[in-house]
Length: 90
Image 1 (spheres, helix red, strand yellow):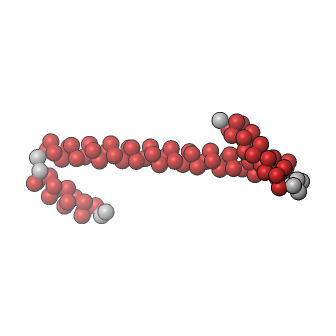
Image 2 (cartoon, helix red, strand yellow):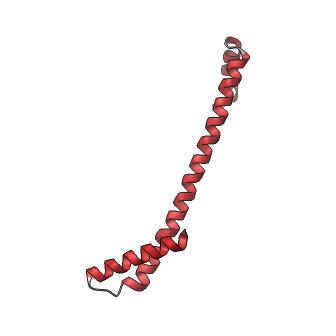
Image 3 (cartoon, one colour):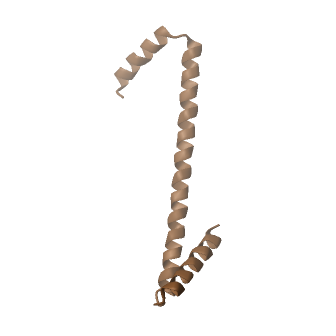
């Protein structure tokens, strides 16, 4: 939003509403923006941890499970890698 446009909007709101109502609205806006910012930060941290877990699992599978031609044994090895990486990253 442009500065002049915001200023004119703020003047109109301030002229029509009492101070208590304006301050309450600004307080709610501040609390909402803080909550939104903290929520997006937490999501970003979860994505980073999930990427690290997937990288560990893929590395383990490439190293240990690639040689298994039997599908059952390969899947068992993949589950073991997933379990070990979860344990390592928790």
